[in-house]
Amino acid sequence: MKKLFKELLDMEEVMGLMLLSFEGEFILHKFVDSVVEKPENMESWGLFIHSLKGAKEVEILFQDAKIYIRKTVAGYLFVMVHVSTPMAMLRLNCDLALFGLKQIGKNRLSRSLLRGR
Amino acid sequence: MRREVLLVDDVKAILNSIREGLEEYQENFSVVTAGNGKVAIEKLKERQISLVVTDLKMPETDGFSLLSHIMAFYPDIPVIVMTGYSNAEMERLAQRGGAIGYIAKPFKIEDLAKKILTALRRESDGGKLHSVSSGMFLQLIEMEQKTCTIRIQDRDSEKRGVLFFREGELMDSRINGLKGLDAAYTIFGWEEVNLSIQNSCPIKKKRLEGELQAILLEAMRRKDEREKRKPKGGKNANGSAVSPGRKENGLPDATEIIRRKIGKEMGTRCGVEGIRYDNSWDGLLGQMRRIGKSFNYGSLRLVYMDQGGMKDMILLSGEKTISIFVNNKCPRDRIVKVLMQ
Image (cartoon, rainbow over all chains, first blue to last red; front, side, top):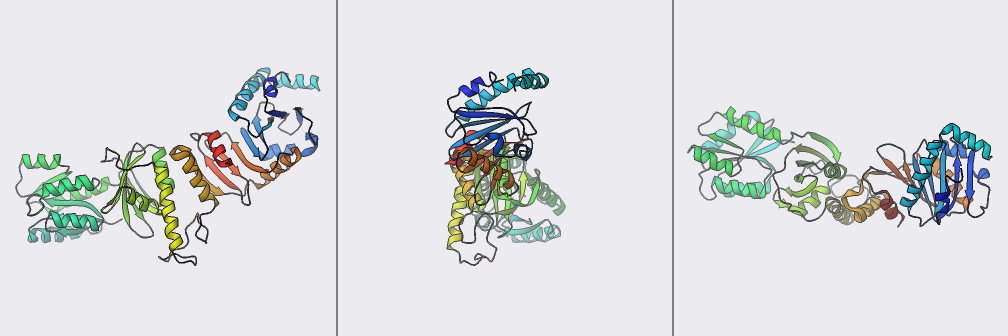
């Protein structure tokens, strides 16, 4: 699974990523540096994902960082990047990763995720 | 819009007789008269004439000179030529000069009225719209790359103007005798208008410098200047209420500032379809602020959302949330960069 997102994580500007199910459960998360608070404890992610109202892509721009959110077959992918990150390259790397995710298929993905847990 | 038809003939008796005959059609148009071409040119400058019916042989400025003047300065005004010296050559010359119709004297009033009504109907062969926002509509014309002549009337002052578009590009504009950019700035300053669309444009060569978005912005700036000079108190000098998109202190509000910024930086092809205050997303923005705080990412500034439909949405975080709707022609990274500056 992590191999699937290797290209993304290898991008210099990427600070971390999370894959959440449509119900807000954590499927995967990986941060380059340690984060102050565990992401699981931060927010009601289920409610947040519900509030996205099925959006395909969301870019959240903060003063010092950006979060790129992308709808996938398994849920929502969150990619945290530096504020100066060129988004076109990030989107391209996401496209490639999500293509791989699609190929695995929803069922196989669930199985591999269960094994990985 | 009630139209005015300018009737030009040097024989007063004929002029009066035709005018009386056309009174029957006053629900559709009224008649203004001129005794020769020179007077007709003055009337064209002063009034909002929709069509000209002219004799050819007249003292001072004759019908042919008048026709050529109209083609040069008022190409949107159709001309019907009437003459007692009717022959095929004369008819051919009149048509080559730009006349849309020809009628030989003597004629039945009904025949002339029929020609006038047919020509006037062409003014709105592309449709009519009432009480629309001029800025948004004109940007739509540009986006759709339409070729048309738009006759536009300000609902507030009842003044009328004409805009010429060829493949979405503003070619020229005029209000009575005022032409070019000065006319465009005035027309674009009108907020709520009635308009009719004719699906053709008589102007082939662009006579206006600048792109539509830039002209719209300059018109807004000029309007702001005028507003600032007007007495304060919620109503302007004409007694009309303070216009939308403007605060009561005469300064443009945040949506207007953003509209201008995008226009200035991105020009006409920015793909913006609407900018407004919108608190319906405040719950989601609150959640995003909490996420940002937890990650130590600083304050929330902007959100770009692709909802999978025809339009994407940008939310600007601030005292009041502003939503900007953009179409698929909008260069996404560019607009985000402009808004973040």
